[in-house]
Length: 337
Ligand SMILES: Nc1ncnc2c1ncn2[C@@H]1O[C@H](COP(=O)(O)OP(=O)(O)OP(=O)(O)O)[C@@H](O)[C@H]1O
Image (tube, rainbow, N blue to C red):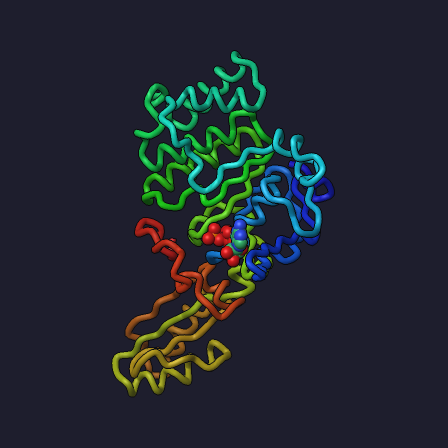
């Protein structure tokens, strides 16, 4: 992996304003970006935040209104063909509308990229194998399941062995098992080839679990850019919730909690208090002892680690889950992994 002194993706002041019928919308407002080769970066944000527009500018599909970007050493405005040759792009719902066979679809893509027939065939078989599509090679594209189709999309994006793979919502609409499966493949392919992966997602858990770097976008701007764990510890702490046997216990316990945590707890209900804590795991043991010693023992204590949604909430005052567009959290990936 190369250092940041030689990033594979850079953007400076990259902006896009759409104007239609005298109304103008600034979809992306001054994106600055440096991505090192081999990084896995996730763009996270609510609908309309500007994620797709950013990706479409970086992949040369959309001209910027202002600003510049370079991908794999080429300028996205002046060297579009060179950029396209170096990247793979999987858009939202990429799959073909006609019923070509799976393997033929890959071969057409290879031809599109100017690959020789032999090379294309070899590469297609390699990708069919590694994306577990080999048994479906002769099946029509239209008969594939959602998850199979998305894996084919990824294979199509990888046909010419690009240095950078852009994925726009690769897992939206897939069931939890297919999502996990797709991710497994993307991570494995990336390990094998060192491909830089830049993707957008609505799934907080996904970004949290798999991305090395999370860029949170809102209203066309990047409002946070760091590893998920640093974002969480910096912008949203743990919460400790303490339940008492009765309201009297809660009253006595509340003061102890305040003293131990160093800040006033919130009242959840008559018998429960909640407090934010920087080092909740350490606090927990001390708190239990202190509550016992002062005759206000806890009936139950729960510790909740922050999620990326807490990060978004702390940055914007809104919940990503409340924006109405984020898919419901999948039941297999709850926020407390
Ligand atoms: N072709 C277009 N013409 C006019 N406005 C557009 C166009 N494309 C996008 N926009 C607007 O730009 C803003 C950003 O859209 P964009 O699709 O980049 O957001 P996003 O974060 O990718 O959202 P989603 O998660 O829904 O894909 C939105 O307000 C959108 O309505």
